[in-house]
Length: 340
Ligand SMILES: NC(=O)c1ccc[n+]([C@@H]2O[C@H](COP(=O)([O-])OP(=O)(O)OC[C@H]3O[C@@H](n4cnc5c(N)ncnc54)[C@H](O)[C@@H]3O)[C@@H](O)[C@H]2O)c1
Image (tube, rainbow, N blue to C red; front, side):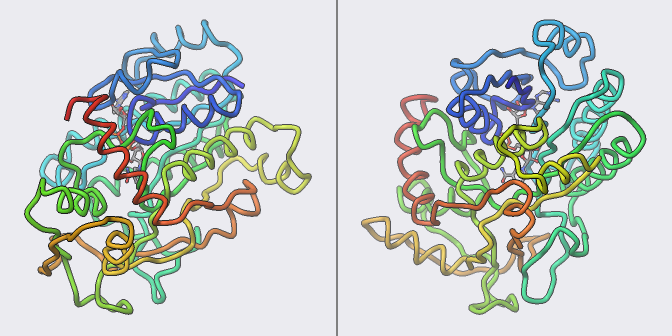
C-alpha cells in the first residue's frame, strides 16, 4: 500500500514512515523541510514542498495514483511560539491544511489520517478522557488542531472523502533502530528536559507545578512510546484502506465518514513518577528542583483507549522505562546523525 505522509521528515512523521516500511508498505514523504531532517528520509521517496501546493500534490498523485490514504502530520507544534505569533500558526496549520483538504475533496475517494492532539481536551475529574470528553483547547496551537478536526469532519460529511483524527497524548522515545527521533536541540518536552539535566546540558530539572489536584500534586500525562504511536498509524492506514485482515465490525466502522481515536497508553503518569522511572533507568544523579507552573499549564489527562483497541486492534506495548531507554540511546545517535 502506498501512503502519502505530510511532515514525513519530522519526529512523528519519519517514525510513521519507518513503521510503514517495516510492514512492507510504501511511504511517500511530502515535507517542506522547515523543521524536518533530510537524514530521516534518505530511505524513502520524498517530495520537497508545501502541503497546500496543489501543483506538487498533482505531480505526486500522477507519479503514485495508487495512493488512497494520506497521513497528515505536517504542522508547527510549539505552544509558546503559537501564543507569541498566532498568525503564523493559523496560516501554517489551518490555511495550509485547508489547502490540502481542498485537494483531497477535488480528487475524491481518499482518506485522511489527521495528527490531532490531546491538548484540546478540557481537564476532567479523574483525568481519564474518552473521545467524547469535553474539549477546551487552551492555546492557539491547540485551537489550530481543534479547528482542523471540525473542518475535516464537515468536509467528510459533505464530500467524497473519509477522515480519522488521531488524538496523540505525549509521544516520547525514538525509532527502535534509531533511524529518527526528537530533532529539536532545545525541546520543551519533559523527558528531553530530564535527559538534559542528567547529561549536564542543563543544570537541573524543574518540576513545574506541585499543587495540581493529582495524587502527588504534579501534572499527570500519558507518555506513549513513539514506536507504539507509529504502529497505530500503520493499523489506521490499513483500516482505512480496507485491509483484508479486518473484522466485520472494523470494516463497518472504517466506512464512517469521520471518526476520532485517542492514542495513549491508558495510564496516567505524574511528573514525580516520571522522575522516579528515569532514576531507575539512569545510572547517576539527576538534580531536581520544584517551581511554579508555567503559563498555560494544566493538571493534564490520560487516554481512555477502548476505541483504539476496538477499531484499530491496537494498544500500546512498550513501557515508560522502554521509552526512557530509547530516548537516552537516541541522544547518542543524534550526535552522530545530526551533529548536536
Ligand atoms: N510531538 C508531540 O508531542 C505531538 C503531540 C500531539 C500532536 N502532535 C502532532 O503531530 C504532528 C507531527 O509533530 P512532530 O512532533 O513530528 O513535529 P515536527 O516539527 O518534528 O514535524 C513536523 C514536520 O512538518 C513539516 N512541515 C511543517 N509545515 C509544513 C508544510 N506546510 N508543508 C510541508 N511540511 C511541513 C516540518 O518540516 C516537519 O518535518 C503535528 O501535526 C503535531 O501537531 C505532536
